[in-house]
Amino acid sequence: MLQLFETLPQTNIPLLAPYLTGKEVEYLQECLQSGWITTSGKFIKLFEEKLQNYTLSPYVVVVVSGTAALHLALKAVGVTEKSIVLLPNSSFVATANAIHYCNAEPIFIDIHPKTWQIDERLLEKFLQKHCYTKEGKTFYKTNHKPISALIVVHNLGNIGNMQAIIEICQNYSIPLVEDAAEALGSFYKGKHAGTFGEVGILSFNGNKIITTGGGGAVLTKNSEIAQKIRHWANQAKTHPEEYYHDTIGYNYRLSNPLAAIGVAQMESLEFFLQKKKTINTFYHENLSEIADFQDILHETTPNYWLSTALFRQSNSLIQKLKKAGIQTRRLWYPLNRLPMHKNSVYIQEEDYSFEVYQQAISLPSSVSLTETELHKIVQTLLSK
Ligand SMILES: *Cc1c(COP(=O)(O)O)cnc(C)c1O
Image (cartoon, rainbow, N blue to C red; front, side, top):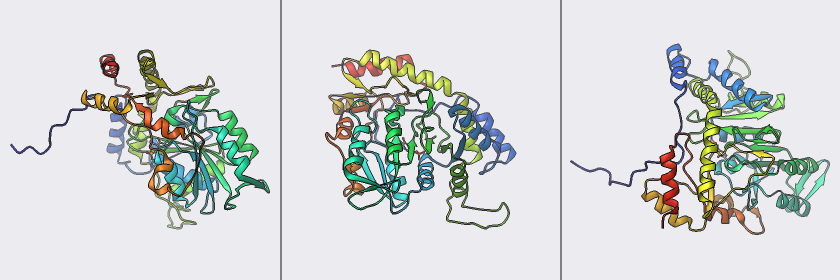
């Protein structure tokens, strides 16, 4: 027989596999049988209600992806082609892409070496030294563009010093947008991630703590923002029957079957969180000799979405794990080093985002991991 594929070492322990053993099939079947498979139907409202009850965000709008949610969030706080948006240098590229969709200019801020979240000390220094305030707005001295938003990313479901960030945003009148794509189930001082700023976003992409296959949500306490976002996500259609649109809109609505999966996933969230914590504790207890994990502030209760640690020999360890059929991943390539940002401003002193990138390995963190698999991963890492 013709062999089409060379035999690669099989990945038998994936990094993050979705866990779909609740009522996903039942709810999906209901969508298919009733014919409600498009962007209206009862599961959309139900999913929004579940998210609202869990996060205690006054308004929740589900959309087609976390990236779409970020795009609309930035637009809603007034980001335009004349704006600057600040963000951490270590994030998934979607955070920066949303800024580009608004034709705004990103300025990258380095991360804290221990928490891997935006370094609020560098952020404040930048605002003090390189910006000025006029008529209740903050502008960048170099080109006089307004700083229209700060995006805080809750990197790996961890949350940094939000109290300091909120104070900085208040002092400089900068709208706060939270990229909580990875942080469903994470809390800071008992408050859910994504509910501190003007707008927060979640993602339900395949590898996130809950998944709808693809999807996202906007969280906000501002009813006007919620209305605008719902409107823009539906092609800015003003009338249920007439095709009248009062501005440029987007086709960003989530479909009913995907929302149905989301409802079922929300029913399992507590279980997912427990399991993620158990996995993280196991890695901590068994790898402390060779790995440095993220610092967690005592105000923070993270979701431990993806256990990640710094290892001195990250390259050889990744290869060793791969040979053993264990899938791992590096952390985000620093955003300032991507080709589309070669002329962008990056605020740093020690370039920690690069250092963390070079040393970090994300370890398998699927809810379905067994104890035997966890032992295999740890033994492989510790083997000579
Ligand atoms: C996943 C992710 C996104 C984008 O979400 P999608 O649903 O994949 O569009 C944005 N920011 C961060 C930090 C993410 O991890």
